Image 1 (cartoon, rainbow, N blue to C red):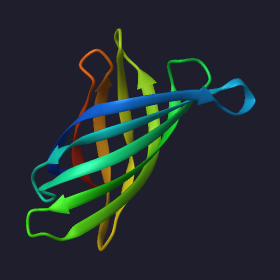
Image 2 (image 1 turned 90 degrees about the horizontal axis):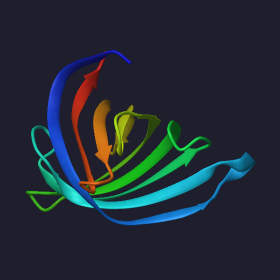
Image 3 (image 1 turned 30 degrees about the vertical axis):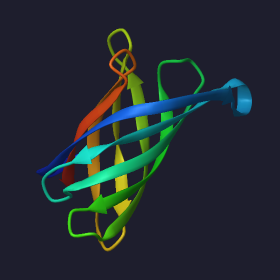
Image 4 (image 1 turned 90 degrees about the vertical axis):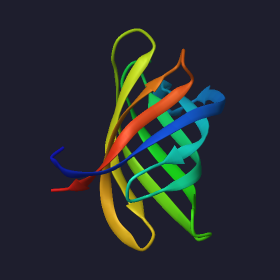
Length: 126
């Protein structure tokens, strides 16, 4: 996925994970996050990511987030993309997120199960 100018960063910790059987022999993970972002989207955020994976390594994800902006407004975001297993307990995440009232943006990040974190960056789409 081609990305343009960096718009900001996010850092989230997951607060819970639910693992369930998925379709066609896959496993579905539902991860709940809380954290913050900087740059063009300065906010505190709550998010839920659902990952469907057949092999425990690569998968498809969907994410929904509610961002509580510093000015008191609330912005919702929904996105989807791919997860790819990296080293050890880490997965790369890349996708597109639609934000209410703003152009869609690309995200690239990493989930680290040992650190219980999801850290990444937001970019303009090109």
